[in-house]
Image 1: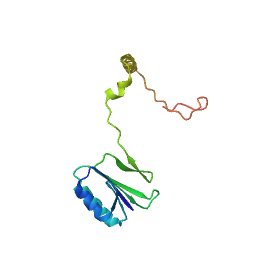
Image 2: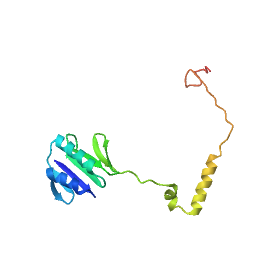
Image 3: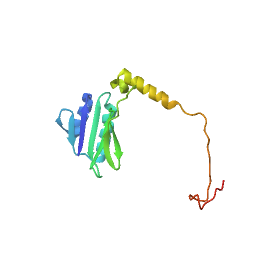
Image 4: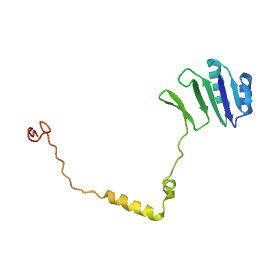
Length: 143
């Protein structure tokens, strides 16, 4: 079984799909195609989509029994331990969006804490000690 779901597609694409599949709802096409016809139809749909989005779901061997293809969408199918999931990308955030919920006073306080954490002692000693074991009463220092 194959299901195509279209959004904002050209009429030519709907015409191509209606030759092979039944339109059970506006822009939703369902049918039963073999793998070769399904792949050729997917190529044709992608080639003729100048705008809009299309998602194809089809029968496939595996734990889910389904396979997914998307075109013109930011959502993408990803394999997660043998199961295909559709991942929606995270929105791009800016620092102004992240700090939007903080008051001005809390931002100043946070900046002070950050600056204090940067103050580090500039002098330090590194000691590399090699021993024959971990028990100080039985073991000796080698280096």
